[in-house]
Image: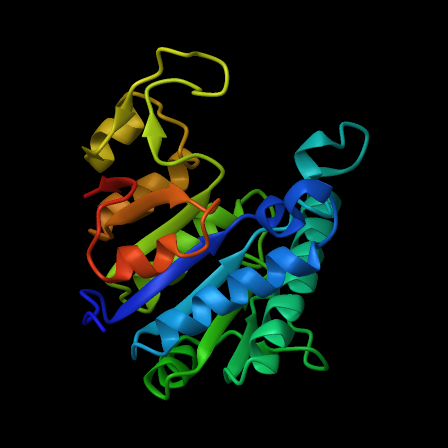
Length: 235
């Protein structure tokens, strides 16, 4: 088996990815496939931290009549549901996990403490970060970028519904151009919309490389860890 080129990764999975073709909620088959993918990477000895979005349950930005802070708090709870589901799926496959929450919910998860998270990773436990940064007005991408910097991840792997970063939406424009590699500054300057500007700036300032790739094939994360360039690298 090929040796991994990364020893510690931060994997960001969208909530929509867990929903699969159902579009909402959690598709059990998709969840099992993703958990198997993560197990395969963990079996290589790679330390894995995961951030899961909550868009399959709740998107606060679409609630025009609701207070933004309340809507964002509901979004954080959605990420907790996804984190617990992923933890359970991994534990059923024999992978030891820990869910660490930025919002204190002691009956369900450990409170987030950076040194505790790093210690779990060093013990080869899969660490799942829930509830973003614990603050409203910040996306789960920003939360993932922050956690990647805090745990000193070798790379931030952002799983999306497309196979990389394009100069415009490939689902709308047939002539959209895919980038093999771009800089953090180009992501911000060209407004490539791979993530919000706060997350991109955090990665730039902390020199965190980003690999944007498609989750259509769950084995892609294993290919990335082994050094294959299957998406767009931001560095």
